[in-house]
Image 1 (tube, rainbow, N blue to C red):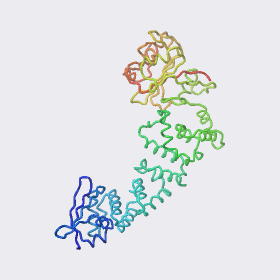
Image 2 (image 1 turned 90 degrees about the horizontal axis):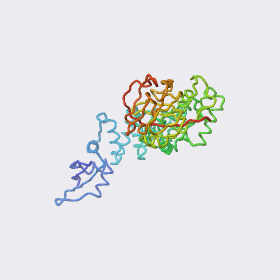
Image 3 (image 1 turned 45 degrees about the vertical axis):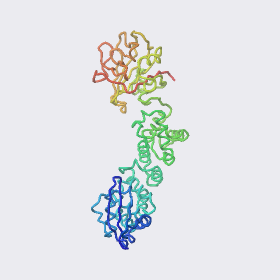
Image 4 (image 1 turned 60 degrees about the vertical axis):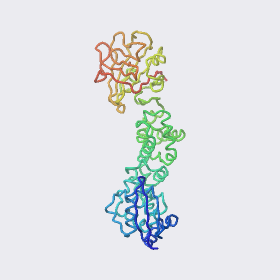
Length: 450
C-alpha cells in the first residue's frame, strides 16, 4: 500500500489536519513521521490505512509550512517573520528534517545576523537546547568572544541564563571595559528580582542580600582593580554590601594607597571611613548637614565629624505620631529626614533640644529646616535657620516632629496631612508649594561627636 490517510492534531485548540500522504514521500522526508507512524498505523475494514497523531506543542501555521516542505521539498523563507524561522527550525529538527535544519541555520547566519544579535538570548537558548544546531552554537560563541557589547545591548539581555552571562564576562574582550561589565551584571541581577528598588539608597539589608545571592557566581570574574577611583566610588561603592567583606576591604585599601589613584584618594578615604544607615540620604548629605549644625561654610573642612545614629525609621517602626513620641521623646540633637511620596524631594530639620508629648513649644536659636529638590543632587538645596524668637519647635501628642511655621508632620496615614510652608515669624519657605503631602519614608537620627 503506497498511500496512508493521516489525521494530525496540532496546537491546543486542537487544529485538525486530515490529508492523504504517499508513503514513499514520508519515508524520504521525515524520520519523525516514519517513527510515529510505525506505532500509530491502523487498517480500516476496506484495507485502507489510517493514522491519528497528536502534536500539541507545534503551532498549526508552523505545521502547515513543514507539511508543504514534506510534499514539495521547497520553502520560501523570505515570506516569514524572523521569529517564525526559529520556530520552523525547531519543528524541522523534531520532524527529523536534517537537510532543512542545516539550510535554516545557514540562512539565518547569512541573512539575519543583525536580528540574531538583537535577540541573542532566543538564539542562545535555541542553539544550546539541541545538539543539532551546531552552526548556531558556533555563531553564539564567536559573538560572545568578539562582540560582547552586542549581547550586552541586545533587547533580551536580561533574560540570558546565568551560565551564558558568566561565559560572556570571562572573555578577554568583555574585560577591556570593566565598568561596562559591572553595570551590565548589575542590570541583569536587578532584572532577576523585580521587587528590588531601582536606587540602592532605598535598599534594605534583605535587598542587598537578595542581589548578592543572585550575583555571587558572577562577581568573582569582575576585575575591579582595573577601575579608576572615580568609577569605584560612583558605580561600585553604592553596592558595596553585595561584595564580600574581604574583597571590599582590599579594594578600599587599594584605591586609597595606590599612587596611580591619588587624585580621588581623599574622596575614597572619606567614604570608606564613614557610612550611614539610611534609605533616604547618603554620607555626603551628612557631611553637609554637619557643616550646617556647626555653622561652617560649605568650603570649610570638618575636623571632628558627627556620627548619625538611626533611632527611628517609618518603614520599620511605623508612621503613627504615637510611635514617634514613644521613641523620640526626651531625645535631643535629632535630625529628621523625610522622603516625599511620588517625588524625589527630601525635606528635613534639626532640633537640638528634646521632643516632648503634650502640647508645648520649645525654644532654640540653633534649629533649622532644609530641602533637596532631587536626592541625587546635593548642591540643589534650600536651608532656613530659625529666626530669633521663641517657640521654634512644637510638641503635640497627635503630631510627628513639628518645626513651627515651617515643617509639620501629621496625619494617621503615612503622615498624609503633612505640609511645609514659610512663616514670617519662624522659618523661611523651603518648598515651592504649601499643599499637603504624604511621607513615603522618614528617618530620625541622633547626632553625637566622634
